Amino acid sequence: MSEHLDALYKDIILDHHKDPRNFGPLPGGAHVLKHEGYNPLCGDRVVLELDLAGGRLQGCNFHGEGCSICMSSASLMTEDLKGKPVAEALAAVQDFRDLMQGTRPPDESSEREVEALAGVRKFPVRIKCALLPWTTLKEALELKDNP
Ligand code: ZN
Image (cartoon, rainbow, N blue to C red; front, top):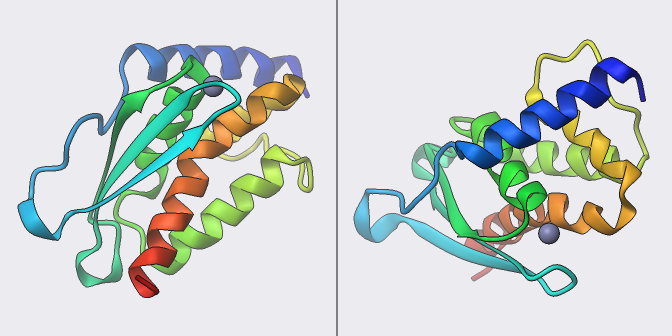
C-alpha cells in the first residue's frame, strides 16, 4: 500500500471515529428494520437501523459500541450506501469483503472513502472489526427477504 493511502487511512479512521455519521436511532417508526451484529473476538456490537422504502436504503443509521475500526467502518458504510438500491448495496458488501480479504487491490483513484479501509489489512486481527457492519447489513437485507 502506498504512503498516500496509509496516511489517508489514519485520517479517515480518526475522523469517522470522532464524528460518526448517521449515528443513532433512525427516526421513522414502525417500518424501520433493526438488525444487530456482534464480533466476539473484539467485543464489537453494531445495531443497524434501515429504512428500505422503495427497495433502497432510504435510511441507514447505526449505533452500538466497539473499537475505532468497527465504528469508523460503520460510519463509512452508512455514508457510502445511503440512498443506494438494495441490490447495489449487496454488491458493495461483496466488493468490500473482497477488498478486506485481499481478493482485490485498493483502488487508489477512487473517491470513495471506504477504499482507505484497505489499511486494516495490515492488522489481520482487525479485519473482522471492519467487516462487522457490512456483514450485519447483508444479514439484515437477506432476512428481510426470508424472515
Ligand atoms: Zn473491533
